[in-house]
Image 1 (cartoon, rainbow, N blue to C red):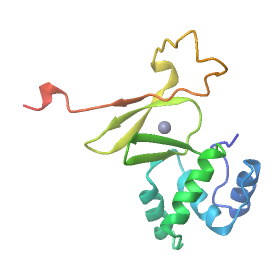
Image 2 (image 1 turned 120 degrees about the vertical axis):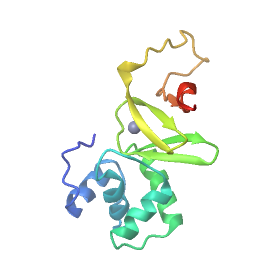
Image 3 (image 1 turned 30 degrees about the vertical axis):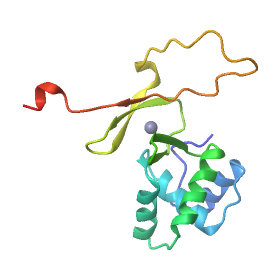
Image 4 (image 1 turned 90 degrees about the vertical axis):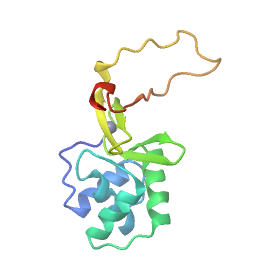
Length: 146
Ligand SMILES: [Zn+2]
């Protein structure tokens, strides 16, 4: 498990974090990991690309996509699909849910305990629940649209 106290300013610490998740730390992977893990946040691949550019590192868009996919599969970050054209990458991997506001295109965390879910008692044969992701899609309230 990663912790929020990880010293991500230190590339060696980032390399260790990647290794603990079974990821070989290349220079570009370290750059991308530092960009997304610098704080709790939800970023699109384009926003991660922007952060790496601002940090002065040139990483191709294809590398960003591939690396974020790898990080997700290894459990370092969480991929959240909002609709067919929008995926966000969440630096927080503990169980929680989200509000999505299409006006601002922002995700906000919802505590796992804030949502009461009744899960089905029977599952398809030979399966178990891996995780539950709930995205609550928002819109302006009718009273505020005047
Ligand atoms: Zn989140």
